[in-house]
Each structure stands twice: as structure tokens, then as C-alpha cells.
Length: 457
Image 1 (cartoon, rainbow, N blue to C red):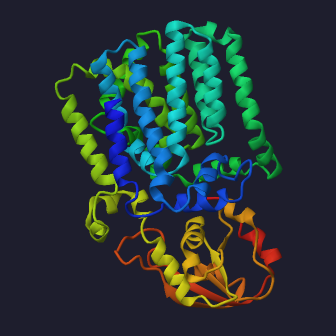
Image 2 (cartoon, helix red, strand yellow; image 1 turned 90 degrees about the vertical axis):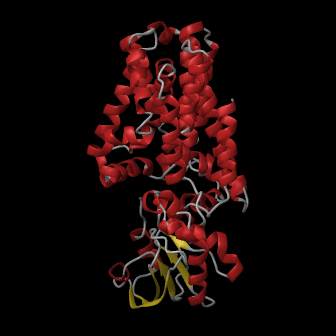
Image 3 (tube, one colour; image 1 turned 120 degrees about the vertical axis):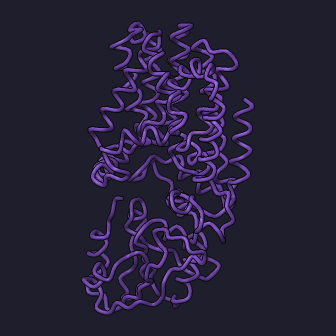
């Protein structure tokens, strides 16, 4: 508990530094249009983002609480596996210092909640193996029902656990009626989202194909090395030791589940951090080995300092460009410059102009900051923004941000640079230095153009 509280204090103290992430700006917009789903995710995180108001601390508080819950659950898993207080502390620290999790606990994104849901399922299954209380299996279904409103990835984890049970046991788990009662609850909870996906042509499946094709962070060749990077290079020996210990104990099913997930995500081109929810069982088991290591505190200290120094907003904004975080921390860079971008658009805006954003971050920034300048909402074809509608066919000039001239000239006869984006602090993120275009002489009606602007990415 102490480790969780300490981590929560750090994340809360840093939660309002810098600014919104592009994803958070996007969630605020689409969440204001409640639906059973969106093309890239289920509804729960966008819905919360829409009601959280303008406070970054309030927006990010659920992510911090989820992070703290993950710390505690990992310690509880270690206890279920026979670990004493020292092993529980080691397991909790293994979660708390992990680079990929720290970023998730700082930003309001679906990933951290999905990982905590996997961790909760791990705890329930681990405890069931020890005490055989079938109410725990109903709890698995309830956790899955909530998780399916955040991401669909928990389906992979549940399937991997089933593989583990079939290969390593205890197979009697699969004969328990409350397991299937819990599964029924999860399926019922997922039906509205599946109905939305079916009505809109299953865009989530297309999104998966886009992710696999993009191959970020080294794609499939980089998938395995990233498992070590994501979990902390110096603390990775803990989960490796956990794999070995689990293989020789009653929880061997988690080894098979881990292997099954590796294979599936490698084949499908999943992102490397999709595996993060599989590590709490490994940390919990490995903690009973690592508690005897003399250098364990050095390992945790190095990874903690690296995580904070490279991934969390600890530097003054004016000097951020000269720090390792600016060079390595993609998410940190994407929390800088949104007010300045909106102000630059406002300088070239005239009443009646249409604003078109090439990505959802730009559209979300104008939605958040544009009212102070009298700006209208921005339209965008990116992901869920496309479903919110197109501009009217009135021939108005269009301000476009985040596009190239070649993308625009097929649709407008007059395309001119009217300004450029400058965050003012020299952070080279995806928007910095981008031209702000004014387009006139529209060649194609919005009715015909809008389908061509639909983008999943």
C-alpha cells in the first residue's frame, strides 16, 4: 500500500504539468457525442473525458488511481503465491517503476485501465487456484464486462488463460458454472459495442490491420526487445525469474498464457505494450526470488530514475527541448504546443471560414482552446471525428492544419500558406513547423469529398 500511495503522490504532483496529450483532446470531443462505441475504441474513457471539464488533474485522476490499484493488486498476487511482506514489496515496486506503466498512469488513455483489468483477473484466478472459491470466477466476468467498455484486448488475455488452463490445469476450473455465468455477464456487456461496430462496418478490425501494417517501434522484429524495454532493462530479470518459478508451481498456466499472447501479438502485428497486463503474475512470482538479491534496491533505483527522467514531466517547459525526455518521450512531446497552435489558427481565421484538421489532436485542441478566440469547431476525417459530420456546402474558404499541398490541390484551386505552427519552446513534435493553409475555389462538394477524408490511424 505504501508503494502505491507514494506512486500516486508523484503522479498527482505531475499530472497538471505541460498540457493535454493529443489523445486526451480527442477523447474530450468524441465523448461529448455519447455512443456505444467509436471506430477505435469502446465508450468509457471518452465519456469520462467529456465530463471531466477543463482540469488536467481531474481528467487524469482515474489513470493515477488505476496505477495505484495495479501496484496493490500485484502485491496481492505475490501474497497469494506465498510471498511474504518483502516479496510483496518487491512485486509492488516492479509495477511502480515500470516505464510503460508510468506513462499510462500519467495520461488519461485506455491502456492503463486495460492493464489493471488484466491484473485484477490475474489476482482472481490466482486466488481461485489456491482457495477454490467459485465466486472469484464470477468476479472475472464482472471485471471483463467493465474492461470491454475500455478496450477489447482483454478477450485475448482471457483466451490465453483458457489455453493455459487446458495445457497446465487446473482443468476443473473450466467445469465451474459460475465461470460461465461471469462469461455471460461479459458478453451481455459487450453486445451494445459489438452492435455499434457491426452497424458501422467493423472499423475496429480495420484499425487493427492499420496498426499491424504501420509497424511502429520496430514492428515484429522489435516486439521482443521492447518487452525488456517496456518493463525496465534492469528489472526485467524479476519477471524472467518469475517465468521459471511459475513453471515449477501450481500457476504454470500463466507461463502458457504469456507464451500464447506473445505468439498471437507477433503474428497479428500487435503493439509491444499489449503484453503489459501479462507481467503482474510474473513479477509476483519472481519477487520471491528477487527478494534475496543484494542489488534489488539498486535495480529499482536505476529504473525509477530512468522512468521519471525520460518519461514524466519533471523539467521546466522552457528547457524541455534540451532534455533526454524531449528526445525519447514521444508522449511528452505531444503534450506541448496545443494552445499555441490554436492561437496561430486564430490569426488567420475570418468569420465564415471552415476549419479542417488533418488529425484528431488538432481538432481537439481547437475545440478546447478555440472558444477564447471565437473559433468554430474544427472538422476532421480522422478516426471518430469523421462520424461527427462534415461542413456545409457553401463554398466558404477552408483553413487546413496538418496536411500537405499535394493532398489539398486536387480539391481546391487556390491553396496558400497563411501561417505556421510554432509551440514557442522548440519541441519537435508532430505539429511543430506545420503550415497552416487557406484553401479557396473548392472543386468537389463536401458530400463527395467527405468520404475521401475518412482516415483510420
